Image 1 (tube, rainbow, N blue to C red):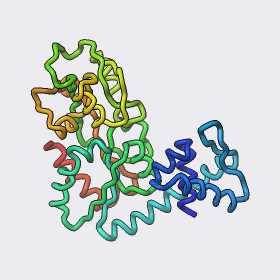
Image 2 (spheres, one colour):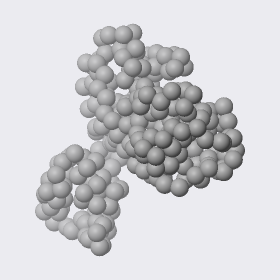
Image 3 (cartoon, rainbow, N blue to C red):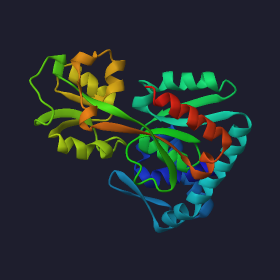
Length: 284
């Protein structure tokens, strides 16, 4: 029943069966069966189609409003009891972080906490936040501003410099502050909201957007335009310092945050993890 209710909650947020199945990592058929099972159980129509999207009926909306906080608390309690008692930390990590400098950082922390088992899940930052709220993840390493996350404990770990990869890595005549069209991340990402204003300040115009920073970087390397990406992404792809234009000193950085539910953050194991993680992050 919990899986069925979680499926309805996810569907209410994303609006399509396909996106729901992608987020929950199940087939679209499984999503449909879970919704049908709920409708049979409550003897009410909970969803209806509007074109390509799926929206909740009034009965579905009331159900989601009632069960969402309860499911979050249940998952959180089960996760805290099971994972913390076994010395296990389940975390969601921004894909660009886990694909660049994140694993080496976590490996260093592991050496200082050998008794702890770390389980990492790569997701976009907004999904990490949702899964922390739902109690599926204990903590998260996310990007973006913390202004909207008043329900979660959010601590800044570092400001990762953003860099420009010139198209084909060819030398360009460019001074920071001059107008420049770039390829960068799309608006739904966690990072976009935290860099958009500084991009405008530096006269950087988003000409094209993609769903991941690694895709953005690869497009720039292939000659489709100048790419604006985090420094860690560029270095992971083997770009040398002299080939990139570092904008960190000009104030264009990507905030990296440690996020957890407030009750989880107060746990001694999570506190220790955060302090060790922060100390090593500052050495990056």
